[in-house]
Amino acid sequence: MFVHLNLHSEYSVQDSILRINEMVKNAVADGQTALGIADLNNMFGTVKFYKACLRAGIKPIIGMTVEVEGEGPVCLLAMNNEGYANLLQMSTCIWTKPQGSCTREQIAKDSDNLLAIISEQYTTLASENSDKIEEALAWWSSTFDSRLYFSVKRTGQRKDDAFIEKCIYWGVDYKVPIIAINEVRFVAKDDFFAHEVRVCISKSRVLADKTRDFGYCEEQFFKSQAEMEQLFEDIPQIIQNTVNLATRCNVTIELGEAYLPNYP
Image 1 (cartoon, one colour):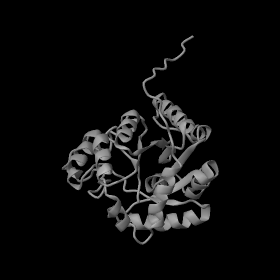
Image 2 (cartoon, helix red, strand yellow; image 1 turned 60 degrees about the vertical axis):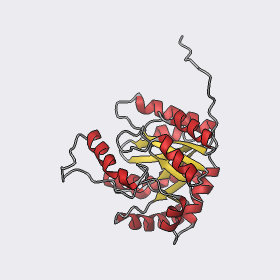
Image 3 (tube, one colour; image 1 turned 180 degrees about the vertical axis):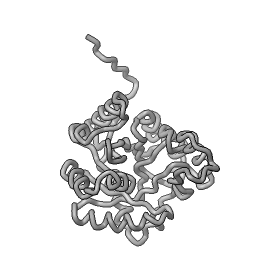
Image 4 (tube, rainbow, N blue to C red; image 1 turned 45 degrees about the horizontal axis):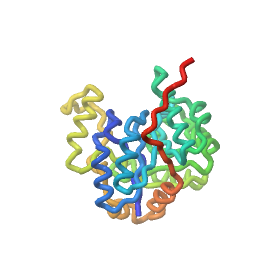
């Protein structure tokens, strides 16, 4: 079994065209039992995703990819309703500050009942801004302890396997489990061109511009469990770790009630 985590939906308008109803439909067809959404710096699609998963008999895992000030993006997943409330607090912080990101201090303050997943993108950006990546990893390890994970992918990019080797070293050093992801941004491989158009629009670039950032590839589609298992057949534990992580996340959102602020 395999669970897709850190999915960016259509609400991550900068980098994804993955529609919530389509991802849930594909998950049902493949017999998947859980899905994890973690849109970039927002939770706008949370309720839609939660409802769609419940209708389909799939366990919804609620999260958000948070841009850490001066470092890079980290995926945070809610373990329970308290963690969900902390994610909402971080979302408020992001949308009420000019920089549109969270500081380490803010994350530490609201880190209870949250799981953190560090990806290649975070470590790349953090190392570009600081030559003390070990210091950053030590901070995350001490802040989240047994709630910290590393995520790795194999999308055909040369740096993927090099990062896996680093994660194995860090995983042993900091006692952090590793999970497999696919950084899904669209449903089918044929959607890659449409995704490139979306990225160009969000960055005010044109497709013909050979100097633009080519940060995505056609392998970032919604793969089946069998495809993911085959992709990581040499390290099956990181596939099983996605299932283990999913069992730790149990959020129940109360629907049908309106709660208004108490204005003095």
